[in-house]
Image 1 (cartoon, rainbow, N blue to C red):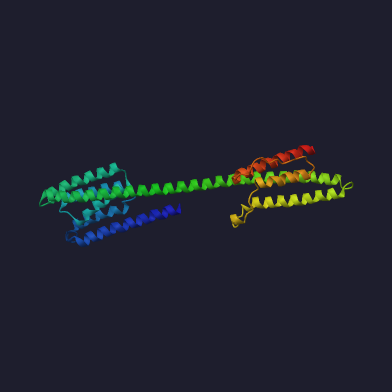
Image 2: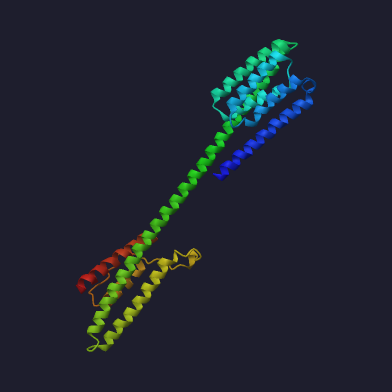
Length: 305
């Protein structure tokens, strides 16, 4: 992808700039590299591979170590030998731990050779060089561990975001199913009662106009109630409408209205209340209301049949 190519190009440019910086600093800070052509060549060969240190860490480390070994045969140490530590750091940060440990052992062997040939005090030189090797190794391993930790946190955040979105979709699906059930209950009950009232009003239109008028008024009242229930159900879909502005769902108190509407259709129905009323959760009260509503609806349907 374009983003991956851009990131790879940035890495290449950054590493090339680092290689140039190591070469320039080593050349300017090392008088031997400026005066002796072979030392200048070794300085260039030590710094040049760093331009590919993150694209091929192990190959760059081995190439740098080979140049340093050739330099050990040819002459005294150079400031550009610090490129070995940068190469080891990159191996420890980019490759598995066993590769980093192997690289550190190679540099420890080089530290022994350098201490023997160049050090005025072999032990002090070895300890000093070993300290640099350990520092490069530990720094690279720490960087690798931090990257793994950050990658783990990013992955966990992505997983939590996915789970949150999934839960939101499941909640939305459950809410749509609930609204569909409620709409079915409201529409089915209202239409059953309206049809029954309309049939009764039609049958008594000539014989009893007053009762027909009452039936028509009941139809209008039931239609308004059904419209209010429908608006209440659909109001939950409007994000801009506050919860306080929505009509509360029906409960136990509205069962009497159901019975009254059913009785107005000519259905022989009575409501018996026993005991004292007690507080009931809104969900349980709505369920009781829907059970009674469904029972009346089915009764009216079968009565019509």
